[in-house]
Image 1 (cartoon, rainbow, N blue to C red):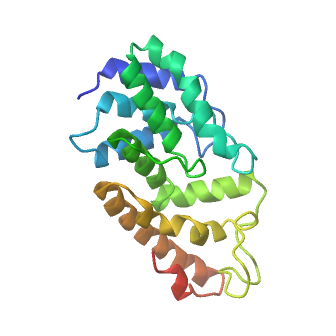
Image 2: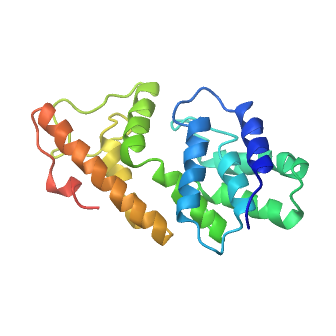
Length: 220
């Protein structure tokens, strides 16, 4: 199902008034998620449901260190209801959008049961990878007052990984493993490509700080 330019314009106008000044979760993030979703969607996807889910999935954006972070996607789904009704979504489509929003979150651990939910989850996670993913990771690291890497042991060869303290640790804790967690073929292919780009950056990063990338960081 095609979407109208009017729906996209209205969605962007609605969220533009609500997005907070978080460079990792701003309008550009929503545009990229929609771009990713279009790239990996198949003929089973309802594109009207998908575009709404892409632009409304971060209506409630809690910081990564907030104890209620795992509830953010549920809160966003609830917040979306009035918007979707005003946009003319019927009950079935509205619930489809809400499920996709709820299930996209890594921390919520809600299984996605529809094509749109699987696509949104992959599309959102793709934005944590590649060149943009590198930038977003370190933006969040700075915003939370964390250190880029452990000066003595950057790649956690002799200590436990700790991504609550070191931004680089988050790569090994989560990001480098995302390709195996993708639910769509297109998402998996793009994730592998983007992680390969990240590993190239990691090699240069390690060289500049006088270290090498351990083999355990190179396998995804």
